[in-house]
Image (tube, rainbow, N blue to C red):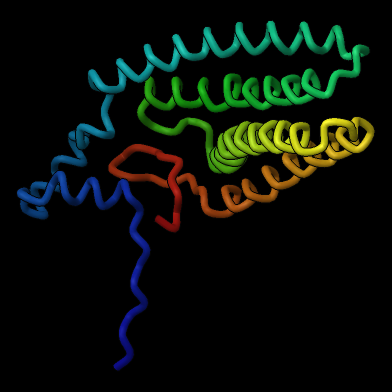
Length: 200
């Protein structure tokens, strides 16, 4: 008789099983029915600290990066390559500040995922996209500084190369974030909805 295919188990299901491992199966059922959830799926002091920390981070990141972005955008006629890099870096950081950080605040405040499957997939994509973009643009700035030292007189090539590297940063970030749309999933665990990596 062929073996049954093994079922994939999410991180939260493992967490739920481990937290209730000392209880009997009937005890587990009664706990779930009464709404008794594992500590990681309930609002606690750690979640409160996370909400406060992310809120402070949001205020600092949003105000700082908005100031930089608006200043550089108004002075974009100056055609400075360094300003262009910093403009794109501030834009990448604004994606993190206005998408990832509020998502983390709401997620830690509610402990459950309230957005549904489509929002789960889209927001997990942008959550990863912002982080990749910031990293790739920092690499671009580093490479630009390297080439500026290596070939200090080739200004025309530097401007063209800088724009190409920025374009590649956006493309690579987009491509690297696409798997999040497929692997992220809206699932029900222990009477709570979570947005989880379904392959974990």
